[in-house]
Length: 320
Image (cartoon, rainbow, N blue to C red; front, top):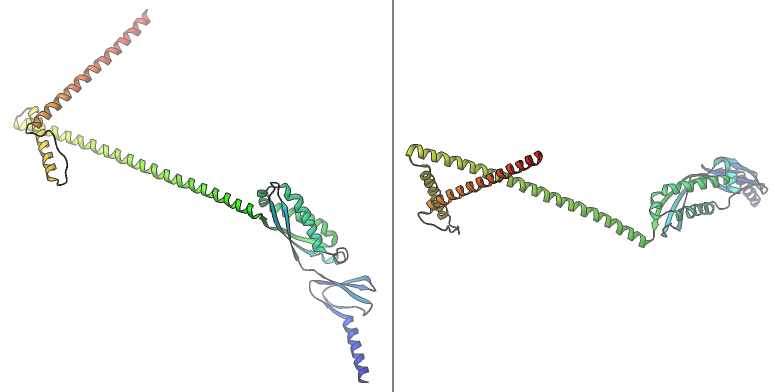
């Protein structure tokens, strides 16, 4: 008797568990009645007739992602590997098509991606693939969206997430990039050196210019001082200009000798050196100035004569 009641309880539990079932959120359940499609059950508490109705399959309504890796080559014969990520989901009101029309969705999506990539990338150079990967992703999405819509799937996003050239090509690209950067660095260094050299040359030029101006101003002041000294000697002592110049030259001469003698590290030898050297120096200086003035006057007279002759010749030619 106990076994009889136990069997009744088990049978009742079996019928009840097959009569009531729960569908989780973002899922859908396909119900078949006697082997034929009957209804799509959405999330929540649902009922079915035991034995007659059967849960044939469950459909995930969440956004799913499929990663596809494709090996192909570019227009410049470089073999590359592209990683494409596709995000997709089942259209909620087209669960029937997603379940019955397509047996393996991942393989179908994979085939369409391969078809698009291997039709587009071989027409592009390697640099263009990197620059236009967004365009490749857009074309993949457009192709998948048009095709998979018929099977009840919506394509959310298609991304080219990685582009991997052959290792040798990658190393060559790195070397090219390094060489370009080294070239730019060398140009900047050369420009910096040029600026330093130009700046230094300008500074030296300005320094020499100022130094020359200083020496010229110094000599002007010395000349003014000598003239004033000569005038004082002429007016107060009553000596002639030549005697005054002799006295000043001799004074400068002996002051120079004194300065040389006071320096311990001086290797300068002044030749000739005699008591009458100041007078001889003055005579030679006056003689040199006179000779220079004479030569200058002769040259000026010669130039003036040539100018006059040229004017006369032009006048005669004009009159003739």
